[in-house]
Length: 114
Length: 117
Image (tube, rainbow over the protein chains, first blue to last red):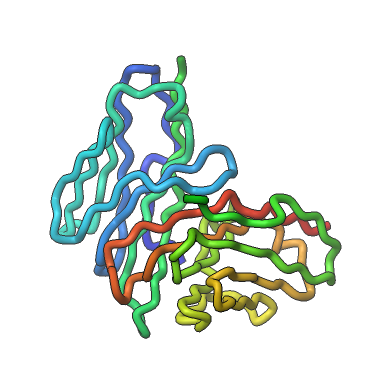
């Protein structure tokens, strides 16, 4: 089942603009992560935010987390054509036997037009 | 450090056949997870192995199985293939997994694209 739901499903912007993607989830989490996937290839880890953190930055990326609303947002500033990809949020929930399982949303497809 | 390696990259199989996919994690990583990605269902967790033990399994039929070897390399097997098994299968490794180090990113391979005809 999908834990996270990204919004919007698709986003098209001009190069240089900012892109904002949102993610909502359902259960308690250890952390929330954002991944990027280029055209049916593997996922690349972008950033991890812990459940006790509210905001985190990495280069042009800014992630916020609101555990009371069970939501997160990813902001990409000054977008580039190379940012064109699908973006997924993933939550790492506590599990029996200490297992490690990421639960992904369905992703936001970002198109950055040169 | 070499990344996560999945082989083969592409595979075409016929309904009813079985298939084995391989994943070599990053050196030193002990947790290997498998995910299935389809346009309709998105990314779905299959199972996770840690030190040769399956710790958790997703909601998939018993036709999907896996194992992990002492060197942490993992294989997954799908028997009696169905058309709906066509998907991108992704393997991810992490150093320890959530039980020891909860704030751990997963490193993904490029995936194996399986087409069942």
